[in-house]
Length: 144
Length: 151
Image 1 (tube, helix red, strand yellow):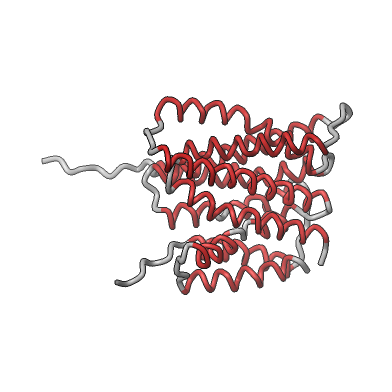
Image 2 (cartoon, helix red, strand yellow):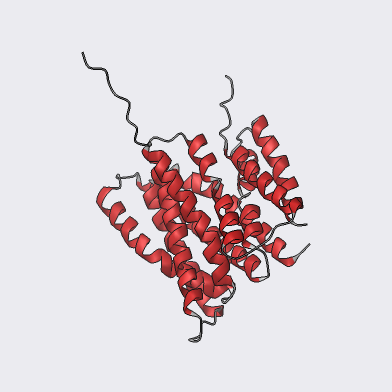
């Protein structure tokens, strides 16, 4: 297995666990307060990361700007997803729709970064998006 | 008699959902650009800098509008939210590392977007939630997708 794939699967596992812990959190407190404490944990983690990270002055501006923009985009995306759910969207539809976001990443990466996918990888990307949508659909309540 | 006219404006939830696709979809792209010149740790540090203005806004919203919660429930909710942030940050580090190690944004993004497969499995085991047939199909598709994307 390629090293990058191992890390991608590791990210998937960590983020997958957050699906459960986030639910446990928002069962007890508001989504805003939950998001705020989520961010505080990011700050705490970054303080630890600072012990091993070696930021230096010679970093390219585009790279620094992209990284900072990444935090803003991801955070804002979490906020807009909460707003979508709070403004009357059915969870099963909103979450399934939002699951389409990798499609945009694929398109942008192909157009802007010039990345190329093989036929099998393109099929895999389509299946991944379909799988994410199916997994996000609500389970029907158990019959009494 | 007047007949009610149907609004042609798109529903707010649809606009917020499309905004989310735009924001998260672009995040995958900028993360790859950043990973070409940064290691995963510095990327996570700068990512948190980008999160800061939103923290101020959400902090203000919570202070102004958040309902009074039961102290015990609040403590429990904060604990799980903090754990979510720590795990989310570790997930970010792995995501950035995948990009640093040569993973294409067009492949890493779809692979990592399969994280609900872990959520549904854990929810089934720990929260005793039942998986529907559709979710089982999704789970099977997810494994096939990871295999194909790794080729």
